[in-house]
Amino acid sequence: MLMSDTAWAVLLSIVSIAYFLVTIAVSTSFFTDNGGPTVSVASVWGTVAVFALQAVPLVRRTRHPVATFWLVYACFLVAVAITVDRNFTITPTYWFAIFTVAACTSRRTWTTTLSIAAGLDFLIHLTLAGIATGGMNALVLLAIVVRVVPTYVAPLLAGLLYGAQQRQAELAAAHAAALRTAADAQAAAAVAAERNRMARELHDVAAHHLSGILLQTRAAIRVHEHDPQTTTELLTSIRNEGELTLRSLREVIGVLRDDDGGPGVREPTLSTLPELIASVRTLHPAIDLAVTGDIDDLSPATSLACYRIIQESLTNARRHAPGGQVTIHVHRRPRELTIEVSNTAATEQPAHEERSRPGYGLVGMRERATMLGGTLHAGTTPDGGWRTSAAIPLDRQLARTVERTVPA
Image (cartoon, rainbow, N blue to C red; front, top):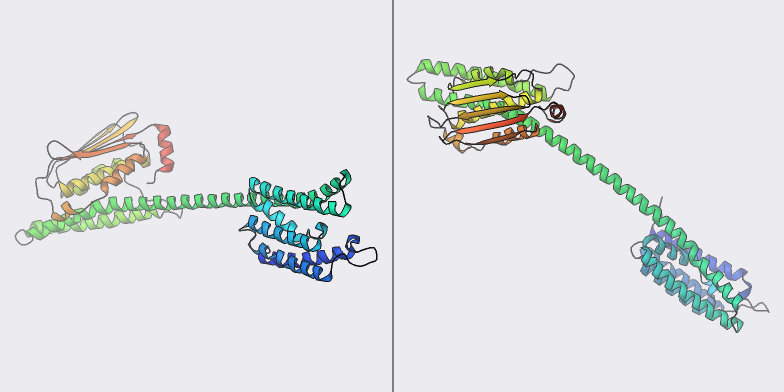
């Protein structure tokens, strides 16, 4: 378990005081020739108090490493002034402050800070040595260098090594966090794509059938008093449409939840267009279908997407252009499948709800075409009708790629 900065401060305070007391106890330079101490007892206890205070700044060492170091250094200078001896005042607290600067700051910062500190330390040592020896020579200078340099080099190297390890660990943690974030984003995208797929399938099925039921219900309400026969036919058609809606929704849900490895429900394809058209002729009898080329060997994704585009186009025509002529062209070329669904202007008044209610079918159709690498265009015609056209590429390599990425 890592120690807190406060724990380090308390520990180093105790260790530094003990180190100082042991050092002066065994040092011959602390005593005179007759055995008496070179400094007073009051000076010793004053230095002990300074070393106790010297560790206090370490409480903030990780947040303010440079400021901490200079406060520790100030205590070092006070201790030198009390003892008039540099050798007794280099403590574990001081080494730890050097270690902190090296580990927690940039190269420029620790180089500047420790160079200034070492230079001042060298001058202090030089001054004290000159006072003690009464002069200066090469041996004295060498002795000073030997004492000063290790004071800084050892904790500096230890701090640099520890700092490098910490930064490496932080980079590894950041990389792991980035990987987790990317994995979470990928999972969220997969969930969103699955939700969109489910919403698109349910919209295509429910909107097509339920709009038919609503239109037939409105028609039945209008004629039930004066045309019982037509009312009966409409109610029968509503019942059939409702049963078909329920069956279609069960099929869609079965496909979307097909995770038990069992046989899947047969999905609609372009080959089942006649069945689709037959199911809507009661409400929209003027529908012409023209298919050129072989559409039976299309990939399941392509065939289903084109079926849904045509289905949604029929739903829109039934909602917004009741009574209009609808023409469907499906043309298979060697490398492209084109679809065109057009309707003339309405010959009957659309229901107010259908005119005002926003829909999302066009967005879904365009999304289906785009995910297959194709294009979809929709807009009004000169005669006031509407045309939806899509072009889907049938390149085999593209088809195999799409087959793995396009949801049904």
